Image (cartoon, rainbow, N blue to C red; front, side):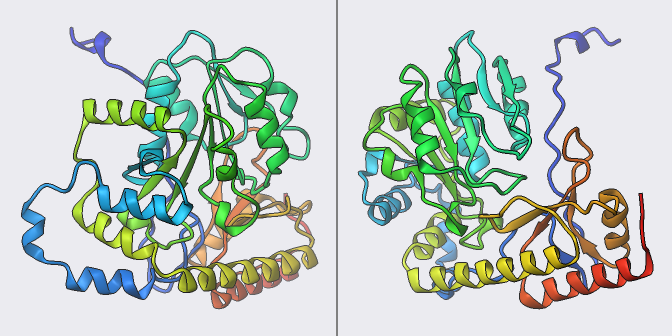
Length: 357
């Protein structure tokens, strides 16, 4: 061992979804939106003054913060923005999870949570979802150093009611509760309406999924001003210029075209419901999805075998070789044509094989 090696911070890193680049591929593995951003976003990109790129962006991201505040009817001092919701959540972990008590989150959830906890030396406990992959609210009543969970959950796609969310928040007045709503636009009611009632609630959302802007990396959090100030104090202690100029400009434009936004969401939801019906007809089982993906298993076919067979046809889905979920595939909802091709593959595959283990 080299003399400096025992001082290296070692963690098991987060494994992002594969980003394949194959001809004629169908990419259904990272929950991206299959449709382009709003036309106004693309127009802003074309019209952008290139001379602005030599200047630092606004460290306060003022234009985007004000646009988000107007869109969600909150004060500008209630909005924090970052480089995707991952950046926002990372700053939130560093800001609020700062005690010797464990942070609580589900055992089947976004796999970045334990990575951040390990990097920042935050103690944590995973609380087991029940046999139907639902949150057990009583598990979050005990002493803790903070709580975080996605709603709808990833990778299971379950949406938990606003009643359950409020129950957990109200039982934990001494802890910050983070509700990660990356997929909320595809179904369910946001916890944003609870922010005015609870000073310990932080709601995190993203432009990556419903607004078709994963490549621009825009995330945001909404909470009471004291929470947002604390996050900004930490951000300015790390890197004050976190948001790039194109993201700020195009992010503002994305919030203006609500008609396009609602139309795009509607298309995805309709395709999701069609896909669920077809998968059920083929014998698949899955939680009722309120996200832009389906988390499905088949009682007669190995998920890993299906995953590998799909890859050979340039159809990419997500497989998690992990306890409790190794029988499942996470399938992003693509266009109608993409999902028809996926269903056609399953029909052919299962027609050729009576059983696969």
